[in-house]
Image 1 (tube, one colour):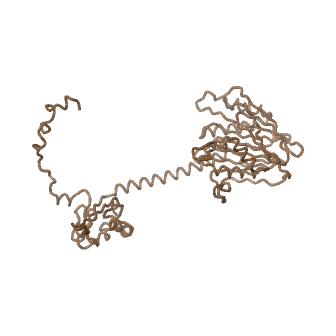
Image 2 (cartoon, helix red, strand yellow):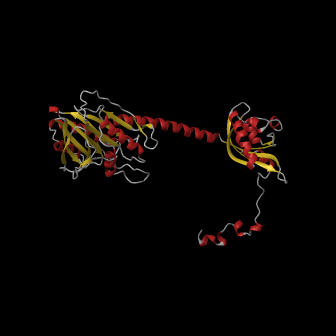
Image 3 (tube, helix red, strand yellow):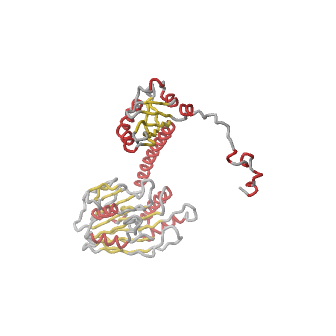
Amino acid sequence: MTEARRHPDNLPPVMRRPAEEVTFPALPEDDIDDLYDNAPCGFLSTLLDGTIAKVNATLLDWLGYSRDAVAGRLRFVDLLAAGSRLYHETHLAPLLQMQGQAGGIALELLTVDGTALPVLVTSTVKTADDGEPILIRTTVFDARERRAYEQELLSARRHADQDRERLRLLVTGLQRSLLPAKLAVPPGMVTSALYHMASPDEVGGDFYDLFPLAAGRWGFFLGDVRGKGIGAAAVTAAARYTLRAAAVYDPEPAAVLANLNAVLYQDYRDQGHRHCTVIFGVLERERAGYVASIASGGHPPALVVRANGVTEYQTTEGGTLIGILSTPRVVTRTIRLNPGDTLILYSDGLTEARTAPHGDRFGDEALRDFIESQGPTEATVAVRSLTDLLAGFEEVDDDVAIMVLSVPATDPSGAASNVRLGQFAGVDPKSGEQASVPGYIDTLG
């Protein structure tokens, strides 16, 4: 209020008079008995044994009883529905006895025709001058609107849960459609792959595949599209099929990535443009093992576990992301896989996972040390170990794709392939017990 408005001459006449001189007309509801009987809430008083001694007209109207049918004839518990009666005896009555009061208790009263009336009650024990309890006063509030609101919330929650479950099924189905239904198995190799979805509500952008080419060669790739959602899924599908198609015409790894870059770079100026990291390789049989010629566009380096357990990164530093430059820089490398050797490809969701809430990232060196600690391995064993590793992380913020190719010391040619889609049964690293790890799609060859 401004100084001008505070000036006494600007105040209403009644505010200019001293407080002791101000009088008010009698209120129209100054009848205490009428106020009690027709209050907007129910009132009742009971003896210590629960017999109703006094009840107001409001509560009688709600329940449909006459005063003579209630006062001195019924106990408070006689007005309660069965469940509320049990709650009164086991909770409300003991609480009043111990503390002398209880507030905001949700109960159901029964009307004269048996209809349930949801209410909230507050009770207080009245004591005599000597402190001895003499009666219980209870205030009753109509909770029908609150109950209807709660039921609407529960119904909305059920529908939301149903919609969320449908969304998860759609997301899982879409994610699976972007992965090979069955991972191929080149002669003399064991192959295994794993996909971990960081969120059941969003499709990710990681992808992998292994497929036959002409002249006994095999193409393989693993990549990661930036972001999540439908946009990432569309680019993932385009990348996967572009890589397979390009490899048919010219399987040279650098040429395949150049073709993928040309496709993705077309939309570079679009707001929804997405790039990716990827490793593409070609396998060729060499005596008892394989030679893998790989090209990398900004993707984390592959790991090789040798037959003697030594684990080494196959560095491909300097490659640029695919889809952001008209002419990308692609780094190539040749890897020889002898009997007992294993090649591990993965996306950065694995090394960027957190080992503790808001703690440090797992990191490249920790991954190498973990793999090396497992000793000589093969594809299915390595995937199981990495599945257990993922299950032990506190936070896996990004999807994780893993593909492992191994040349076992014993040639497994001719063995039937085995494909499993769904949950992967692993070992909980915290409890040491077998556990199903949710959110995994694994393909074993």
